Image 1 (cartoon, rainbow, N blue to C red):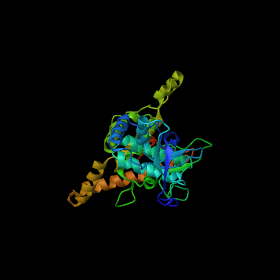
Image 2 (image 1 turned 135 degrees about the vertical axis):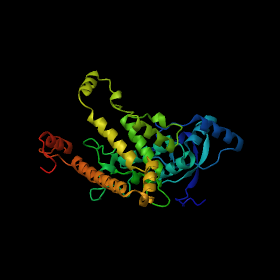
Image 3 (image 1 turned 45 degrees about the horizontal axis):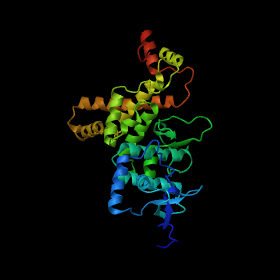
Length: 348
């Protein structure tokens, strides 16, 4: 092999002790699976080890592998740390390349495992938060995007801005999907699993579900888990469950938990509007449009007006939430109630 071919890499013999994990592989959140290690050990004993672990130079010495963490663990259980293997060394591999290649390997090997895919997304967003990578189409102040679609790394919660002193790194689901190449073949839109798993990470961050609940599930099964969580109101006060401060809990009970209500409302609206979370409802609406000419005139007119009113009112509420309320502002329902109390009609 041509040693100058940096893109292909060159073969180098190194000791096991000199090999380190991919810096984006979080072994705490995503530990190695012993059953997989045992399978690889058996395969290596029967067919010998195959030389295809790729790595780059590590700044403090040794080499960081791109993928093959289970293979490396199997080798370590079979041989001493001084045992040498052949690796494919690419000296100048960037953080972006390390992350993307790890993501591809995860996708190829564990494509149906929601926990592995969620960890890949988490690693990507954390790397973006730390400035190790950039999203080509990342949100900036000059773009016309819905604020309700924006998250701020490293958080997965919609609209949760970082604490003072931390860099503001906004992103959308589409930015993550484009970086990882997890977009639909017929468009640049994110694949369904990206929406589902980022929503799942949001639920985990809020304390509404446990990370362990993703284990052994496909992204489709996780979407069902999220729907059930919303439907049954699971997670109310989930973050509060982590607190042992009794006085704080008493104070919370005495004050309406409007944050929990707002969060659940956000999730429920997402479930209504997001075709990735509720494809059945979207398909039903599409079918309704397909056969709209068969609707009774008054039914069709009423539904169209209701949908239009919903859009106008939703836009009005969104605008009010995104700006500082004037002191004289009155919520619409309060104003209506006052007019009713005064005996005045809508045109008085």
